[in-house]
Length: 82
Image 1 (cartoon, rainbow, N blue to C red):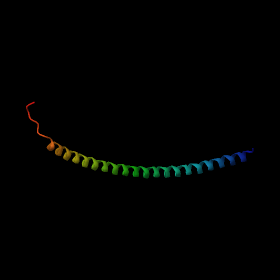
Image 2: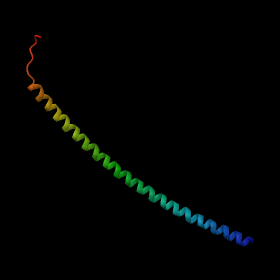
Image 3: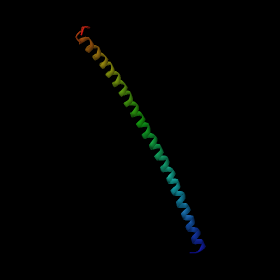
Image 4: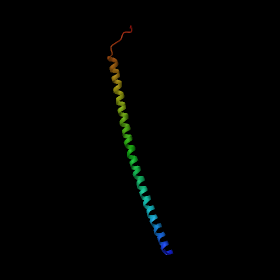
């Protein structure tokens, strides 16, 4: 292989490397953007689920409180003498 052929091959390899590096950076930016979008959607869903759980817990607590008061009132009176 002559000096000129070797330099031409090195030049081609450098050009291919630069093209691959540019493509890599583009794909990296796209992947990062997609990851941010997915993370944002996941955070939104978790937030919605948390609010639904809080509302459910509050309703359940209120129902349990009313059921407890109703049950306490329905108990027969017990005499103190045993």
